[in-house]
Amino acid sequence: MTASDELQALLALTCTPHVGVILGRRLVNGLGTAKAVYEHRTELPDVMPGVRSSLISVLDCPAAFKRADEELRYIEKHHIQCLSINDSAYPSRLRECDDAPLVLYGLGNANLNAKRIVSIVGTRKATPYGKDLCAVLVRDLAQLCPDVLVVSGLAYGIDIAAHRASLENNLPTVGVLAHGLDRIYPSTHRSVASEMVRQGGLLTEYMSFTTPDRPNFIKRNRIIAGLSDATVVVESAQKGGALITADMALNYGRDCFAFPGRVGDEYSRGCHCLIQNNGAALICSAEDLVKAMGWDASSQGPTAVQKQLFPEMDLTSEEKAVMDILRENENGVQIDSLVYLTDIPVGRLRSMLFNLEMKGLVQPLPGGCYRVVLL
Image (cartoon, rainbow, N blue to C red; front, side, top):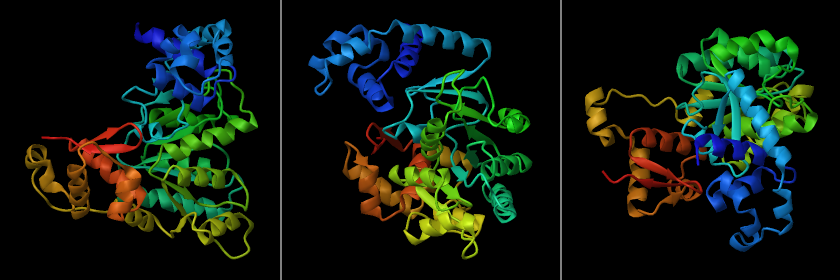
């Protein structure tokens, strides 16, 4: 089996009727490859308990392979990146989510596995207060964490304000779209999107020529939440997509933050509700966010060579505590258990585990587990 065969099968699976994201991922995990899912579809009810026999006829879908072939030709012609869920460049934070897309399409040069990633979301009807908050937040983040990647949805209001502020402050920024990469919606943001391709990128789970229908925006919000260590709601009414994104982030075990506004302001009510209901921590500045995420730790430790040869010399006390727990459990420990055992907030813990992985000290396992790398 060639890589192109497997990619074709993955694309076909994403557009096979009645096979959603979760079922598609379950099938691929169960059979090992997407190609095997189709080749052994008649055996699925026997090898995968709970799979209905009706799935056999559902997977007999030549139209899905025809559409996959069309998409492969389109992405090759337009130099679109196509990341399958098992590719090393696929965002590892998103891969941890049960409903992560099997395939992502992208343009640009963003590192989707950057050390620090934050989503900034809010109302489409941003007030001057909200736009100013967003601009100051991103400006100060650029000073405090110049390696941070900013994610949003390229929509009107807070989204586009976050992207523009990122570009102005030389931060990479990624827009997650609710349609294919053959268009930009809204079209008024085309020039910003073009800049983002040079300083970040555009990302979507949707094939080309997929229209920006309303349900797609809700689905894409899970990608905005899943890509990031933390989600910040700058401004929101009592109902809206930003609150949906925050809820998804919480369900993924990520940290959420919200800015307060004046009592009674329509587009601060959503933030106030989040804070009141413990759905988000209150922040008033980039410093608050950086401190809460543990991104402000700095020390004059060993030299670069010493860090490379002796990575454990540079560990904080919290990192050492995590390493001790992992050493006691060689088969791995789930991140939820680590949160309980260490009392470290999940967002900071994820960032910490990523740092340890980059140092070659821990290894991520399926199911949100981590284990120590035996040196």
